[in-house]
Length: 273
Image 1 (spheres, rainbow, N blue to C red):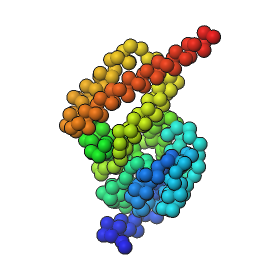
Image 2: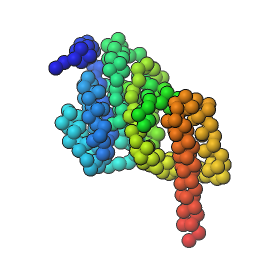
Image 3: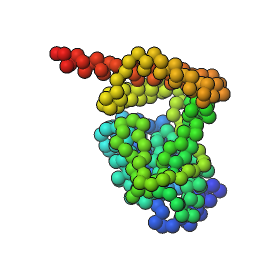
Image 4: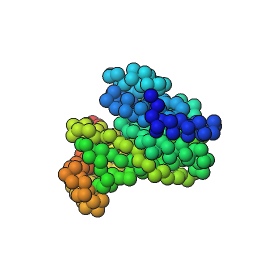
């Protein structure tokens, strides 16, 4: 049964110029716990592209059942995976959404209103609000966490960064007001798994760029990170969760540079053989 919100969205979608079509692009791997919630928030777009990299759960089946077009692609990093999805999309506009994110009705309406009125920019960023252990985090440097996620396919795409990928546009971008919800860390274990993956990717990226880790990076940088998150960015206002984020962010900095140090030592050992 169509709700009042759905009716309003369909009315807006009907007014949207035919040329202003939107494809949502999502990359996945073992996201059965998140994919339905994500896709349910995207029923208003013209096309949903899912790029799956070897899911062993029901992610692909659920995405297909919910109307998405699913492509298989070997994992080569976040940037390349998202760029692959953009290339497969057929719409003029691209909306990039992660599987653990949700487009709020307010954000959907804002995007549709923008396109009805004629978007003056080739791309737009939006504020992202992250949920950590059940609490929405509005400080710690986590919010508004603006990310470019809406852009014209002809004027932008993701770079090839394996982690911390970004959209590269051929012109300036505008700003949306409504939040994109990010259910990134439902449990502490989930956070630690992600942190381990990101610190490894970050260490390899730094190593490939020729960066090296020393005492300053492993001893001083973590303390600076904690002070920045908890004091400067007012993480203390997010309660105990803010303290946990600040501490674990500092640990992640130390772990990243420790892993970089290991890569350096392994290279020296090979050179000395």
